[in-house]
Image (cartoon, rainbow, N blue to C red; front, side, top):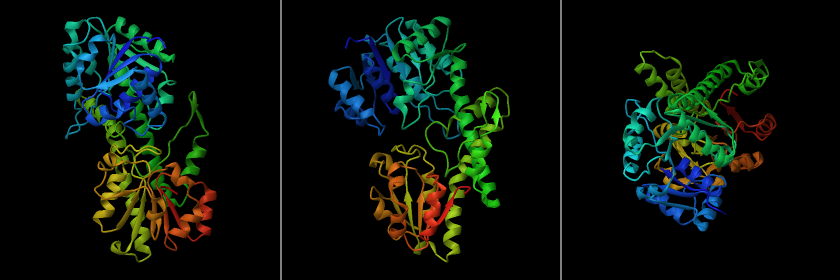
Length: 439
């Protein structure tokens, strides 16, 4: 395959790995810049450092072909006409955006960037970052500079990256046009050009605030449904049949809580932005508070069941099924299962934790307790089987087998599985007690 050109991807974490591997597959010579020795070693060996469907095959194929290389040396950007920056933007202790990695990445590559190259920032940032933080560092190189929000979801990132419209906004019209042309040529997807980098930066925050608020609405509906004794999924399914605007009402689904790197911080970006602009915004803080309350709410549901059976914490075994925040991934970043595990452990419950997708380096983000991949060992003798992730391995386990392994009359707590009514009926016929969030 003829090489289409050289692209540097600065920051080869989860998003950078997907972007770099897909661009290499599309025929670009991709040079990754990454400080983590674990990630560099894995990719150099042709292995994916992240458990994302299809990613390992892309990495292996493109490393073998020579189109994909990753290292810690930033000087490789000197041969690249296009540079994509995708590094972390965490929250500081007081929930302010921490832009140190963005600033550091720009400063790191500045001595090597070719004059006139195209630099695109994909990290989620507060509006103004591209122009106020990155542009001053690279101004001597007269680069074209644009922001293109990252819009990928774990578990289906490769498919989404090659299908979802790309949004671009540059610091000037030339930068916008160059960024749009690159993505159209690279991916063949629809490209939406917005007026300026600030608009593009705001798009990602608007998307994630909508998602976080929508899930918070579902969580509040679940709490009300629990008190009423109705099934919140019935309510949501019926409510979503109402035409509104160009589509239908689209309420999402409640669960044990919201996790991940984006939804847990991006609403705070909006909250701080409002304060900076002299606005007292109510929605971002509210959505975060509601979603942050769901792990404790879930723990209370489990505790109430065991207490009603006269079970003391020290005499109760709880099988915690799932640690990752997203189904069918090993991603544990800001997972809502962490506060659940911490609360149950602090109260003295005996925990058997299982997640077939999570490796040790991810597990360490959540708990010091062991995490097994043995589903049956975790469930055996459990007084409560708490499904906190909806991994396919859990769905494949027959209800009859859960009933055989768990203690008689055990509770099946549904935090993410969203069991169909037929399976719930089977549980009850086998002597299990079902309880979901809002169900």
